[in-house]
Structures are given as C-alpha cells and as structure tokens.
Image (cartoon, rainbow, N blue to C red):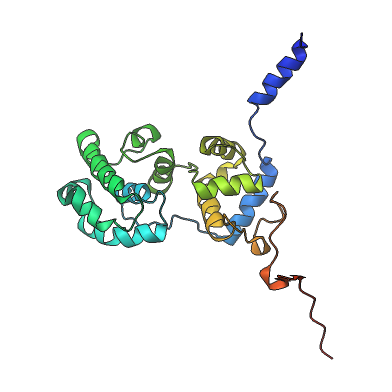
Length: 248
C-alpha cells in the first residue's frame, strides 16, 4: 500500500501551476521591451470600437497587413453595424476574400453586427463576458478590444504571446488560458496595459517561430531559450567565421 504522504505529494505536484519569472526579473524584462518599443500598440487599422472588433475578428489566422488591406475599402463603406448589415454577407465577403476563412468570417461579421443592434443598441460592450457573446469573438479578441478601445489592462494571448511566454520562461503554459493566468500573476501593474503589445511585437519581429533572432534581442540575457541563435554575420555553413585580421 503506497505511503499516504507520497500520494499527497503527487497530487500537489500535479495541480501546481507552471513556474513563471519572479516579479523582479519580469520587471527587468518589460523594462527592456519598453526601451526597445516605447509606444507599443496594435498594428490593425481601426477608427472605433466597432471597427476594432471586426478587424480583430478578421485577424484570426491572417496577418495584420493582410487584414488592413481588406478593411481599408470595407470600412470606407461600412464602419457601423447598421452600414455593415446594409452591405450584407456577400458584400462583406467580396472585400475579405484575400483573408483566410473568409466565408465564415463574413457570416460572423454580419451576425455580430446584428447582435450589437439587437442587444446593445449598436454600441460595443465593454465587458469580457458580453464581448464573448458576439459571434466570432473569443477571449483573445475580447481582451484586445478591452485593452485598445477601453483602456482596460488586459493581456490577450495570441500565438506570438504564447510562444514568447513559453520560450523565455516568462509565463510558461500548455494552453493560452494557462499562459494568460501566468502573465497576470507575474506582470507588474504598471506594465499590464502594454504587456501583450510588447510580447506580440517582440514575437512578430524578433522571437520568430522558426528562427528566433537572438543576436539582436533586447531580452536575450533574461531568456531561458537555448541554444541562442547566433548572428548570421558571424556564422557560415562551415562553422564560425574567423575573426578578421587587423590591417597593418
């Protein structure tokens, strides 16, 4: 019969949350990212909470650049729920054909526009629960809208935030929800409003999925990822390049 203390220990270990950075180290990390990008913000183009909701919903499995190209003409015609309903599903679809999953997204844009009119008098709600009731709006989208449109210090976890949080050790987790909880615990209050923007932009331009560019990373000295990617300028297919001999 197994020792009771052993069983209890196993249960405790199983339930324990993944270990995040300490507050001091997390502060140092965010300080470095803030110096690298002093004014982080979404790269999606929007003019109102409504156009932001639509843009973020369209951005799933698509690039911000691609979404902006599509919404430039779309929002010129329909920047309110009422105008979007007049445009109709086929009209929306015509403008977003270059975006992944465009058929389903066109349906969601029309459905969320209708719900905004029917339930919220055409106004985008400012609570996480109500935003998630809108078709095509999940937790990540809702958190982005709360942060960008309403100034709420939420942390949205997309693929970039998930990757950077795990790779650096800042807030590791097996699911986006676990990573979000870890980030909420470890991120100092003064950094919470910009946290997911810093992590998204860092993941998009430096800590890339296939090959992280560690040689010019502002937080490489804090990151737990190993081995660090060397500077291509110092490496060839034959191995490290020899240092140039000083000229005489």
